[in-house]
Image 1 (spheres, rainbow, N blue to C red):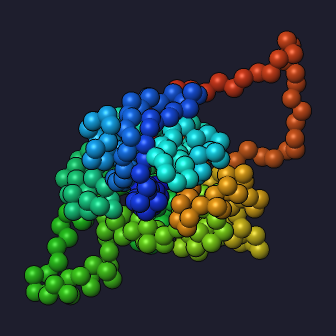
Image 2 (image 1 turned 90 degrees about the vertical axis):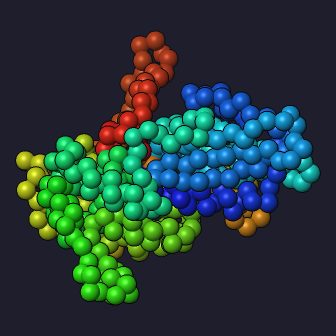
Image 3 (image 1 turned 30 degrees about the vertical axis):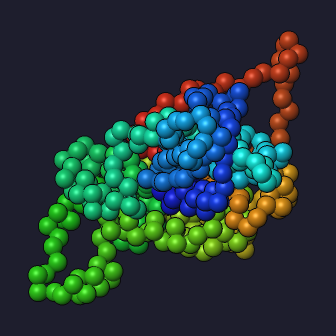
Length: 391
């Protein structure tokens, strides 16, 4: 479930891994991807990345003298549930590498790949950020704060604060684990009305008698919700690593889990919001809690640090056995591989309630003797809260 920090870590990876590399040739798309073809060809070009909220822009820039002469091309990616970037040897492409950028000779040929197992990730040509997304909580804090406080009359703030925090029109970059951590630190009930929580911030002004250092110290000691929407994601970026997904490695995963205070933590309670997303919290859920909703409490156990009771509601634990891709990556220079965490989907909610495990069931063969194919719905981008929208 990549959120703002994971997109920023992905941009750091691309920039670090590709800084000294020269790419060449055509951009290659897998035949099964429904994303657009990338009509770009150059004998020599560089790749750079920039993240904003839950989007990442990749820019392909031809080098001086490259043929054929052409302008730079930008692509904007949204990662869906399982999108990530990896740099691998060209003869050891990972499965589900749906977009590939190859390095130019001389030297070992490498491929920067956009890997997406579930195929919910999207890229668009042109480099324009998706219309309607608010300022980035990480990079555009002042604009982000102003955008929220200026629009408190919007009906989005009549909803519980836990749901409003997922509205990317106002909180671009905040996702499920971040909302839990932010509300927990301020002891705000997740189902308190968003307008009630935020309206007091309109009048918050530091005393003019305070010096600048005193104002900074006061903010650090008593941050409000909008300040934590900026500083908490920044903490995750400062953890470094490759994220918290199954390919991130034991060390990265353990570091991220140790940082979490609330999300899927032992002793915390959970409820589903109206979109079916699970919110983790402690104490009273608040006046707008769903009627009849049953709160589940995470039990403490010896295995609590290894994985959640419900694997669908927590970052997946790292794979023990090395995959073919990871074995191939061992021969690469340091810091040339990365995998990002599992992301949020508009069709399959990673926070959906678990299905009880009643044992394996044998599949009944189809009358014709042929295997049935699964049907998937088309992906339609939206800016509604996560779980029902583009992530």
